[in-house]
Length: 112
Length: 111
Image 1 (cartoon, rainbow over the protein chains, first blue to last red):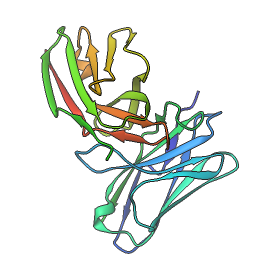
Image 2: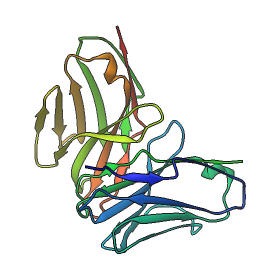
Image 3: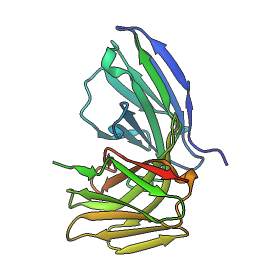
Image 4: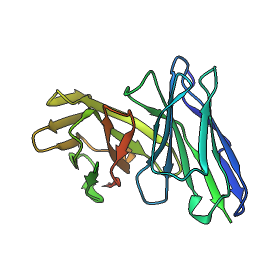
């Protein structure tokens, strides 16, 4: 069975650009969460979506947005990229709200 | 606020047991998790424990939860070189479903 899949695996952008990251959850999972992991730190929660509605938002600026589609896949969008947005972006899926979360391998975003 | 603390580094010899400790502050936790991260990879869910349990054993892994002291530990029996990785403790809030992670413990296993 396929796990959580994320695309692309690596991405290089310059300051001011925008980026879209994609995530496909494990089949049957209806909740998707996004996390940012800066080098040397633990992941920080950005968003949770369940049944296509936003159920939680972390302490990130409005430049960060996300959505969940009818097939439960999700996109994370980041506008006006800053150098500090360089990180590993992790997507996790779970059966429902507050169920064990399974992570993908992430998208490594580098901002030049 | 919500916080999770871990020691940063642990070094053991192959074949020994490893114990990684974690403390958390959130009183509304439903599940507490241990994840493993190898270089350049995402997070692998190792095990988790429901907040009303004291202990959970899963093959070489034993999780102990002291809810009164808000202390969680992960014991790896017969540690192997393949266990070398960063281990994250995570607190699952019952209110929002988000995970709050510690800063990770780097486990080094010496042959």
